[in-house]
Image (spheres, rainbow, N blue to C red):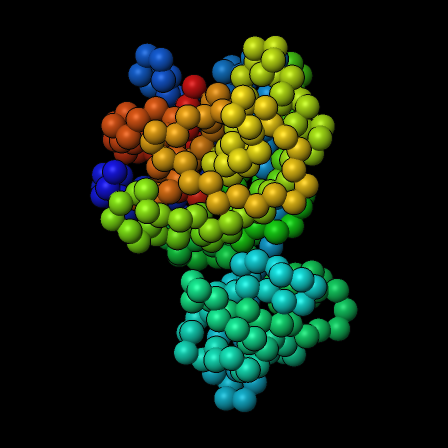
Amino acid sequence: MKVEDFDYYLPEELIAQSPTEKRDESRLLVYHRDTGKIEHRIFKDIVEYLHKGDCLVINDTRVIPARLLGRRADTGGKIEFVLLNQIDDKRWEVLVKPGRRAQIGSVFVFGDGLLEARVLDRTPEGGRVVEFQYEGVFNEILDRVGIVPLPPYIRKQIDDPERYQTVYARHRGSVAAPTAGLHFTIPLLEKIQASGVNIVRITLHVGLGTFRPVKVDNVEEHRMHEEYYRISEEAARVINDTKVRGGRVIAVGTTSTRALESSADDSGRVHPTEKGCTDLFIYPGYKFKVVDALITNFHLPKSTLLMLVSAMCSREEILRVYQEAIKERYRFFSFGDAMLIL
C-alpha cells in the first residue's frame, strides 16, 4: 500500500479552529459497515446506538502543559521545548525548536528561572534528552510556566484550556488530547450508563508520534513511536465479560483502540497491563481482536489515524464516507465533529 492512497482534498475552512459551544452538540456521522448506510445525527444521539450489555472504553489520560518557551542562559536566544517522554524524575525527552541552539551541554531557562534545563544528548529522531533543575514540585511548576500544545493546524490558543481535556481526564501524561472523547459530557455519560452500558476507563498517554507525518512511500515501512498505556484488572475483566456475553466493545478514539488491541492475545482476551508500551501500527489488513465499534473524529490526509480507521472497513469506503462528510460540511480534526463506525 502507498501512503498516497490515503490522501484526500479537504477545504481549509472545514478545519475546526475552536470547539463547539456545547460538547455533545457537535455533529455525528454514523456509518454502518454491514450496509454502507450513512446517517447524520447530533453527538448526544449516540445513546441510541449503544445497547444494554455493551462496553464503552474511554481513555482517561490528561494533557499536560508540555510546551515551554524559554531562553538560552548564555546568549538569550529563544527556544521552544515540547515534552515528549519522561525518563525519570528530572530527565525528559523533548522536541526543540530551533534545534541548532540546543547543543549538548547548553542550558535553558523557563518561567523567569523557575525551571532550568541542560541538554544531555540527542535522540535518533532529532529530539534531545534534557535534565531539569527546579525547587518544589515539577508538575506544579509546569502548570505555571507551560502551555498546552495545540496541533499546528489550530492557529491560536483557546480561551479555556479545559476544552482541550475530556471531562473524565484524570492521569497526566499526554501531549495531545484523545479528541474523540471531547464530545462527551457528564450527563451524557450518566445517561449511557443508566441504559445498561458499562463504561470502562483505561489510560494511554498520547505522544506526538501519533500525529507525525508518514515519511515513507510504502505504508508497511512506517514505524510508530511507543506510547505508554495502562489497563487495570477490573477494566480487563469487564471487557472480557462483555465479549463472553455477546456484547460489543466500543472504543472511544484511536488511542483506546490501540491500547485494547495491544493488550489482547490472539483469542481476543484482554490482559491487564500496568506499564505497557505500544508501537502497534494498525492499517488495512489488520484483524481486530477486541474492538467491535469505534467513535472517532475525522483525521488528516495520509495520517496513521486515517489508516487505522480504514482498517475497520476499507480504504475505499472510508474515503467515500469522508467525501460525504465534506459535502455535508462537517468540521474536521481535533475540534471537529465525530464519526461512529458500527
